[in-house]
Picture (cartoon, rainbow, N blue to C red):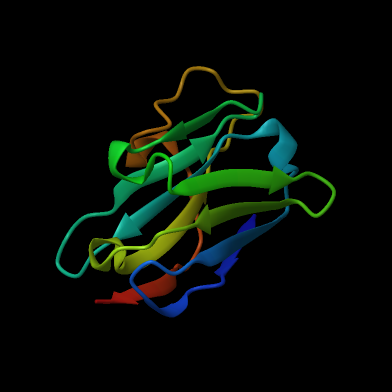
Length: 126
C-alpha cells in the first residue's frame, strides 16, 4: 500500500490549491480516506475525509472552503482548497484505513487510519 501526496506549494492568501493523493496497492473505493495537516511542532489535525460510501466530512474551519473528492478510475483522492488563509499553512497528509467497507473507525481521528502518505507542504502568505 502506498499513498503519494502532491500539489502543495506557496500561495497568497485568498488563493487556491488542489492536493492529490494517488493510492496504490488497494482500491480506495472500498476504503475511508482522510486528509490531515500538521503545523510545525504540532500533531496532525483532521481536515477532511470521505467514507467508502462517498459521504464527506470536514473540520469546521475549512467547511465551505475545502472540498474532498475522489476519482475511482484514477484511484486518487483530491482536496480542493479555496480562499486559503495563512493559518492553513501546514504539511498536508493523506491517509487510508485498512479494513474494506469499514463503518466502525473514527474517521476524524488519526488512529482511524492505518496507512499514511509522506505529506505535501502548503504555505499561505499574508
